[in-house]
Length: 363
Image (cartoon, rainbow, N blue to C red; front, side, top):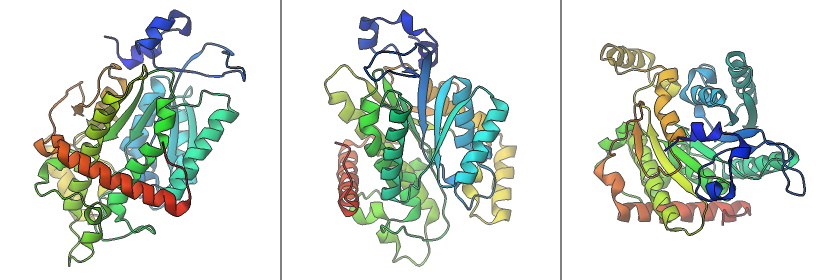
């Protein structure tokens, strides 16, 4: 079975109606006339790379040093039309410029969005739709990569009352995915969601998915902020959400195929430890380097590419460490009852947030 990259490189004229129905093509036509006829048949792919916390205004180094920017560069070299989203316009433009320096043929677009704000996520979705319309491109997205992640060392809450680490690592990606589901489902060809998790989810043993825990309110009463535990918990939530969405999509009827895959890059040297005391971060990175476990972003991106380019039939699996390797995640991540409860809690939060801003729902 050909992977997505091989399928994308096929010429549009090679496809016939039967092949499209079987989900053998993943690409976007660059321009479409208003009457729906193709203006030309250049094979294109459109990727939506979800907001990266490393490109926020207080980042300690350029976004190109992180896993998200490495993913964008790699996908651009595969011919994808990459849409970058982040909080800082300056760093977004800098990232695009540096990607262009390494790949002058890269097709890039940038939007500002803050995962900590439901209003910002809604504005981003509307801006994306308007851009697709103005560009006369098909109103759909073929690939969404949720790669945002922070390791906060102190308790901070968003204006909407969510713990910032939970909001960045799980709640924001959940909301963003719900907002973009219509565009993903509207794709004329198979589309995919790739959620980037972490092996640290295996450290979670006591799992609660009630609203206070998911929002992070239960952490307010603690004397010391349990940063590691919250990070691990947020990554388990992302896994539970991924598998539950996979199950729900598998039950839907119709010829369209939307798949969900989890990618775990392993240990990658990024800015995620920027809030950890410098001496501790240096010791940790040195030990990991000596154990040959530490990867640079250009190498750590491999598992994400494996997930993004896997065959259209692949879904509900966990890619780890590159080289196409798939492994089982923790036993708790496959707990369907827990996943259903988390889905209900998260959906209720999404609905409340939508009502609060008077926005539209994904359905």
